[in-house]
Image (cartoon, rainbow, N blue to C red; front, side, top):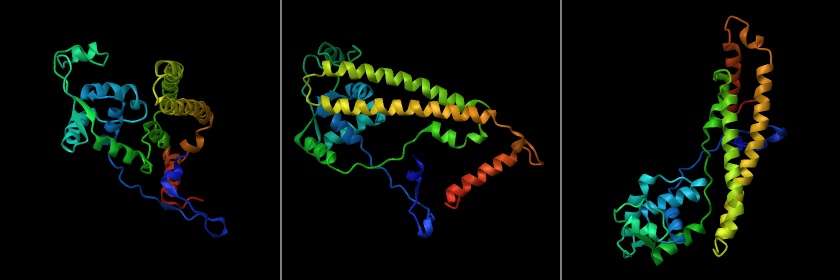
Length: 255
């Protein structure tokens, strides 16, 4: 699934493979666009944005919370957002009384809303071609190099992932049942449900992969290890073979 993202593999003459690396361009920053999107839902302060991101797009998109306030200031300077005149006493306690996230403190919150320029930039960005990004997955990274892992470590990693995925799937399914009622008057509901459905199907697919991976790893532990242990190089025989295969894969010369 992921090797095509690492290598370009066209078919050569006679069915051979002409393998070359496919470099990836630097991913563009979308912090501003993600904040524009969140503010399209309703005006929010920086604190409210953090809470709302965690509860919504944080399931599939990450933003550095340390970048939110500087980004909001730049967006205000660029005319993408404007500050909403405070209602009530303008504090988080007031925000809590209005049904917004807050901790009941007394510090005044600056609430931002989109300007027309901000709406225009959001709509322009939504029409742009999506940029493919390389997934960063530490489990797969460790699995790729698992021949060097301590005994039992790799299968433990997969089982831990399996447990977390079951928790995620249960939460997503509960949200799928609750959201149509809680957001029944929201015109964005069909799009919310589509992103949620992606999470459900991804978790289900990953759980199937975990079952397959655990079975494969258990079968590996049952194989004789004499081929790896024999010889003057000891365990380095098996490791050198694996290293050679990986090197051939990286160089595109594996047969």
